[in-house]
Length: 394
Image (cartoon, rainbow, N blue to C red; front, side, top):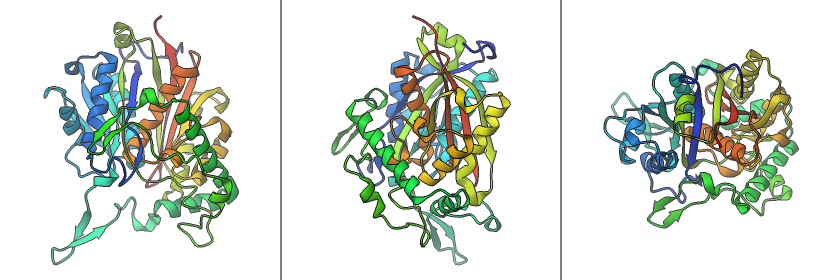
């Protein structure tokens, strides 16, 4: 076990993680609002960990395009937690789910309490329509919030992905190849049942939804090559090498190492360090690399020390640019596919990364394995979390 840990009553550790199926927006989960996606995940986490619901200190949830109103509190009550348990909702757009986990980890480290549920949720299908008021009081509808002052460009995500591809010379061929590999890996993972243990099925009027609907087993390089540029004329970013919008929820149980031992938890992910940075908004896709670089440098670690890496693949261009900057072989990232195949549920995606890392570590990692979760964020930011898999008992 790492020797530079906090005292055990303040060392944060992730001991459980769950997610819903990740399904295309306006698809299988379109009738479920955000709190209805999240509540079953929270309830399942408590059942898995055998932690009494009243012992939860707080519920910290990320959400990007919901209607406000503190979805964390709404979902925890829907899940059956007692009214004594509070909840807080955070918004760092695409990074919201990972940043909620970061915040809960820091609360444990600060001595704020022993048990947190943290993660993210997004129901793009049921997100409210948004509008500014015109001078006459009527609605002026808009599709997304403004992320930065217009003087910074405030590009749409696809345009920003093209900016990254151009600035860092990421070819169309490499983007398509990366996207195809993501689908192939996700299909193989589904066929091997690797996602089953982390997914909490959801009930809808159409039946039980228990599998992701994004991975495409018939996708080929030829099919990807026929996609036109999606955002910029003569560009390289297409619908095929970009993620699709999705509905999902994901959350984890974060506690102290001391409490984990009391619960006789066999293993978990120690939260060693986290970092969030700001970058040029026009090149927002590079944010994950900048956050990871700063985090690793602070601990004098090289990328060679990493055993597992999960990166939110919003666009193949930004994933490849970030990995090249860090010196990480793309073949070593997202072993079971990523958002290009599974979809991007904005506020949930960062938590999905951590859920995937815990599942992968429990399946094949040795004690001491270092894991990295990284995500680039709208407005020109990036968040990184360094985790370490350890076995505590048995």
